[in-house]
Length: 283
Image (cartoon, rainbow, N blue to C red; front, top):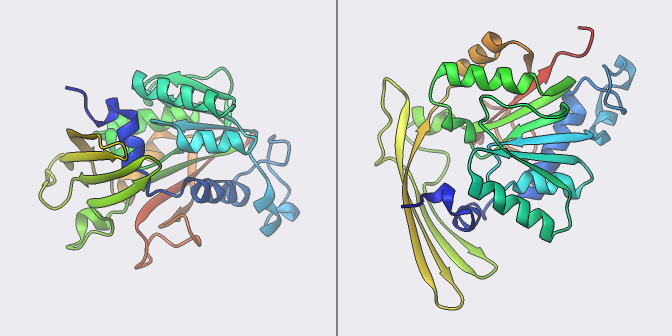
């Protein structure tokens, strides 16, 4: 039976609570603040050019990894960035390509494994959203992924990863909900995604999350998709170690939300967002 990642319409509806334009605005703001590239996207910017003025700078090109329906890549394309979306699932890739074409957006779509891939040319900004790094189950997988990404990011460019906050696994109370209802254009969707009933394996740090998505359309159609999704929990120290092992990146910043540059250790932090910077050319 097809799972949630084979059903792009259901996956998009399940994630309808996300504010993609605001998240992309944060990604672009962080690129302006933390990248080591000048306006032309080549080399490091002089120290006098750093600071608040850098927030207005834009990357010329971007790559969304494990992109699924590529909502963030499509938003970047709509803002004039040459965008590429990469995913291992052909159904997701076809959906992303079709939606981009319908919107008149230039989007390059690549079907590939995020641990081993190459692009025709490197990009200034790479992103992985919605905790998609959870699909890398071992340290070797994460290191291979970081190595592959580093080889495809320009000098001074950034790789921004959004992961689940460690508090979701290490605290008694989760900072994110496992049950929610979202209104969509043609109906509503009810989602159950993991939660306390799905126990984390203390050795592998992998949880088999039970997922149920029920889509109720305005025309009276009701359909439910169920799945069991393996999900690896990563701590901040594990990600730090993988970055050092892979080489190519340094950690430029850590945030706990897309809004207001919330620190990772703030009580209100609900995500673990790692901003990695590629060594500038000549460093």
